[in-house]
Length: 390
Length: 83
Image 1: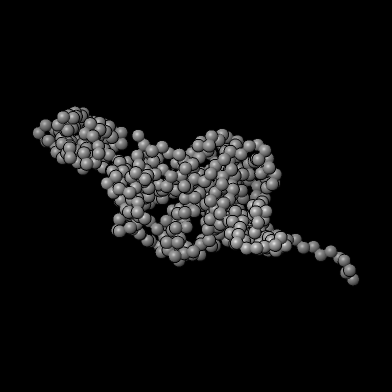
Image 2 (image 1 turned 180 degrees about the vertical axis):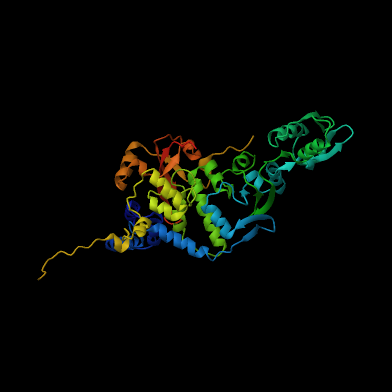
């Protein structure tokens, strides 16, 4: 094959992969111009055959192709990523979750990849994990309730703070602030002593023990280091580099932690991905998540069906669910919407709004008992009376 | 002191490009469609902000397709509707 032919291949109206495949398979061969023309002709006819026809009902095919294998999925499966560590929902419940476009999956997890300086050293990887994993105050020292003086005393452990790479001053500042902001508990005064590394909390109401214990509970569990939504981090070595797997997900905040590779880190929360990385990333996430859920159960579904579903879900700029609050609820036809869910409401609303059904879709025509505009129903044959002897 | 996030660098985000008017006209002519028939994306979408797109722009997205190897898609930038 000469460079002239290569250029011709590049200008062809074929998919990128087909063109590249054609180039590699012809690269080492001697082909004459005539042979080349014939090859192209055959490739084109093969390509045209493999394409879906215009006006084919691809949605129905996709629905069947995902629905039928879906019946074979395990109803309830839990799976532990790695060695009995992080629990993730899989199987049918997860597939439903993806299609329903839930704001929050039932088990949000992230795979946090690290930059080169951090990814190959266990200790440095651990350092990043401390910045991410939510750590409550009681992990940093002793918390005692002084019933006589109605106080909650915190004695920070310097060694733990040093190991966790967090300054005593920082804890003294964040602990009371977080109790007020995140836990919405404000009825206390606080005194910090950086030299003794201690904190003294005094409730405003000094009469009630219940109040004191309530305060102690807030003090114990206030998150002073890490990201609030991420409950647990597991460091795992995969293919030579350390990767952090998390329970809980917060892409936006994790991206701001030093050492995190912002080009590879992923979450299984689709709507979060769409918010932080854009709708196109959301589309990719739907495809990846749906495909891996199906493949994990040993079910092979062609990507094209899933891609169609993902495209429909992301059509309008945000991730929409398949059900009546999303795609099915936005159909043009009243009868089609009524046929799906909450029939009476749709018919009533349509009657009030004086809606007209143009009967263009499949469902509407089936309801009124007309041929549908697909397949044999799409062609209208009229016999012309030529050479017809009466 | 954190790592800076460049949305376009993320492996899940395909290449986004703003199309000029001529290209948009060509696109609409080849598919015989009007501008409103294109898929949409919101003006505050992180990827749109990263390429500096504004309402009314058409964005060409070059996806890594699992079937075709590489595929182009187009989205019209619209204002995010108020909830």
